[in-house]
Length: 365
Image (tube, rainbow, N blue to C red):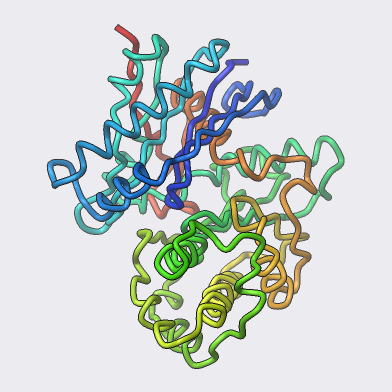
């Protein structure tokens, strides 16, 4: 087993998660300690200014330095890590066009931390014709196996729903022999999650999120706005499929004429309706939908999901897992897989033509 540190800064741009995991790249041996470094207001503004931009564009160098500095500082708190999985900060994602862009160099991070760094996880998948996202699904299989072995789930398919800036879902068969095996996983982005809601709160209230879903809970969803949103042809595209953070940038216009509370309630309804629309693509009904990411802490979102979905909607903690650190743990696990030359994605998770081992390895100098 290798002691790996996974580090993740997502599209919600609220900070950097770091989590230890012991693994051989297949089974999970143990989960270790974790930490979080919050993004300051000025830092978040710098990252937002670089969204949608590519290497060499204005603001990208500053965002890159910020990502590297934040991750290097946090990595120093984990001297026990033998290996670091570094996702970087996603600024742009256009798999059928310019590719995918995660700001941050693993070469420089390895030099600063004195440990091997696995990074640039998405580029090879895109190069081979995949979507480059989502990348946590193979780890979700490992989590389901771990939970099954401990009697925390039944031996039946389960769905992991990650609600970060963008939502993604993984249908997992924990009885499959490997995550890349046929019928083991199906994964895809479901639609917007916290990103438009957080953007609304920042623009209208000057705060980063709707804490405890208080504002959305006081409003009513606008039915016409929701219908217009669901008319987007993207929902009729069969998975696997992935989204850029701002693919549904027109959402702000759809709720522009609504009160703050009704706008927030509408965006919550958008999240739940997106997930409901996605469930039709799953191979079979899951025993439960296990929710991870920041969205599970919003009672308005969880209530909207429970009202729309037929399967039980539960926080992922019900399966003994840490919903705040699952993606960070995923990139530690994926880093070990890359070191072992094992697949990190495949046809049923990113639409790549075959199993892909994505990621670059940088040794300290």
